[in-house]
Each structure stands twice: as structure tokens, then as C-alpha cells.
Image 1 (cartoon, rainbow, N blue to C red):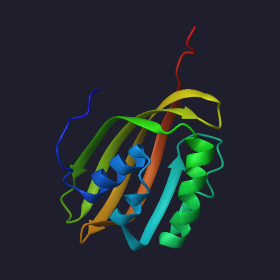
Image 2: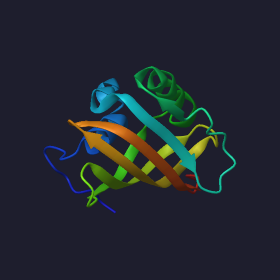
Image 3: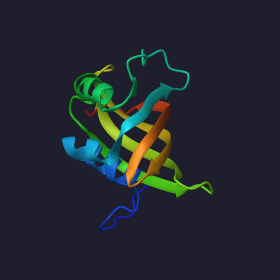
Image 4: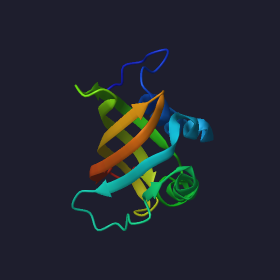
Length: 140
């Protein structure tokens, strides 16, 4: 699936995810100071207990660990597809990516669902569910 290319993202979650993919530390400028943040994995044994935080101080410890342990070689967005929900500020985003998964030591793809809320142009609630992480065939 090819993402739709736009000159400017329409939502704070899109901006945040694009900066995450780019490795841009300015992604925190799209987060509210009191952001409520959590990443969960569906039917996966990975320890994600450290992927939970409230506020930018917690984010400052989570992001470097994500970079070093999960995404040591960065990530590539295959698609970022936000869906504006009927309740003001709520967005459900499908995020597909390809990356070298540090825990497995190999290239993988994943599909995640992110329920977020934003106010005043900043994400103040972030719940990511990683539905699956698939190993890519090794190059010969």
C-alpha cells in the first residue's frame, strides 16, 4: 500500500508520526505536556511495560529506548492513514511500517492501530496497539 503524499499533514498525529519516521526529535512539539501515552502488543510476548508514560518527562525516557531497542535502524512508513472520528479531537490511525526489529535482529513489517486525541494542535492521548509484527524473508 502506498501512502497518499500530501504537502502538509492535517492532524497533529500525522505530523508526530512523520517526524517519528524521520527520526526528528521535534516530534515532541506535537505532544501536549500532559500526554497520556501507551503502546500495547496483541498476542505478543514482548515486554512493553516500559512503553507507558504520562507527560513529556516520561516520553523523554521512552523514545530513546524505542530508538535503541526496537528501531535501531529507524523505520519506513508504508502508510499513515488517519480517520477522523465523530467525537471532536479523536482520530483512529492505521500505521504500517517496515523496520529492522532490534529484538528479533531482522527486517519486519507491522500494522498498528493508534487511537489518539488532540487539542490545540497537540496529541494529548496516544494508545497504540501493535496488531502483528511479521518477519520479512531474509535476503539471499
